[in-house]
Length: 93
Image 1: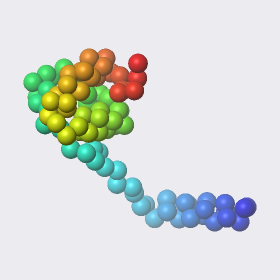
Image 2 (image 1 turned 135 degrees about the vertical axis):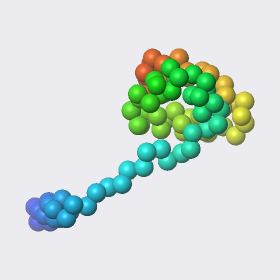
Image 3 (image 1 turned 90 degrees about the vertical axis):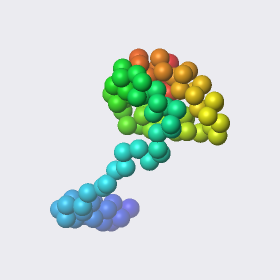
C-alpha cells in the first residue's frame, strides 16, 4: 500500500506543478421559468438566493425543475420562498 500511496502523492505533485485546473460548472440545470419569474419580480428573493451556497442553489433548482407540470413547479417555488429568504437550504429546518 505504501508504494501505491507514494505514487498517488507524486502524481498529485506533478499535476499541481503543471498548473492544471478543474473547470467547475456553476449551475448544471437551467433555472425553471416559474422560479426565474419570481426572481425577476422579487429582488429580495434574488439577493437571498444568490447569497446561498452553490450547493444549496443547485438543490433548489433541481427540486423546482423536477415536476413536469407548471402548476406543481409554481407551488414548490411558493412553498420554498420564505425558506430562501431566511437563507436556509432546501433540507435545512
